Image (spheres, rainbow, N blue to C red):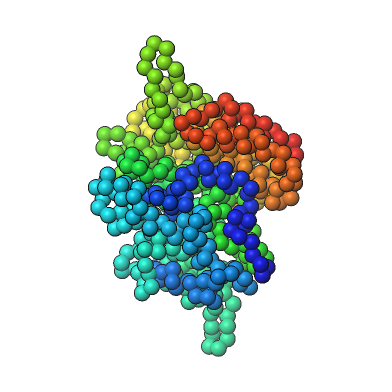
Length: 478
């Protein structure tokens, strides 16, 4: 590890991060006057660990993670400073609790009749490390927001031993495996990381970790998820020699692909559960494409139809479509990296959309089938080895007619341009494409971003044309 470390923005290996951020709610990411944040859920206790949450202060010593500069020999040791960064997305977790007391947070809580947002279970599940009172250590503070243990797990079992063990006076080397055995969550594993992030960035069955349509109607931002981006925003370490020796090298394509699969698995699992998939007489609209309903209505003999028929959704005319942004991406991934499972996944996807015109019972069964298909793909993607050509192959499949014809709506298109951007950046980092060659593709990627900048004015034809040009240009560099 070098003595002089670069700032957080330089460590993020993607020169279009600001473009990606614009597709999510920027105020929400920064925690500025909003009731949302880059929050993550209290991670599940791993086998063998204590369930006690010791608090952020337990990690903040100057010989641990509380240095002012990142010049530690093995880890940076300035991780707390990154977590507390007051103005950038890297510090949004630490601001998560505070935004509950903002004007927007108070307004949402008042509209929903929750009482103070700072004490409402419906909010604290994602805006704090919401550990039960019986599991809080002496230094635990709910007001710390989304602290270290929200992602790394309750530290009671591994805090004192994750850096040193002693057999009498003899120091015993500590391994990453021994830390995991003591309860540390293995965030180096894409599936484990995705599941932790998804708890708040898509939803879970745990207390206070599901954003309903009712909450969004009260003012909560729309929830969306992309594991590569969220990992970049919250990364507080280098993938250097020390990291690789302890945990191995994390492949960017694997991280992105597994994130898509886990998002589909989580979404359909929640939808299949009656307590989440239904809201009284109506389906829970959180799961559906917001902009299929929230768009101008033209009433008259020459009304202008404001949507395109989507070949991936065999639904009755006029039916609100399920938000399939991650489903579309996973379809492209499966054809590229798991072709043996692609046909069955696409069939399950179409069956799921078709079931929307059949009834709740049929859609529930179809959701379970799609969930299981996505889970099998996640396992396959997490277990396979990756080569330098994989990013090229996935990009080509995103731009192929079978996928691009499905870019009829804002959400799926936003995921697509972020995906191409993410995978192009991985090719640059790996030296497969030069910075100069990649810069020549920026104009078309920027046009694609521009087409989805405003959800109310999405331009699908322009988007498909721009993304298609970028995909073909990348393919020509293979």
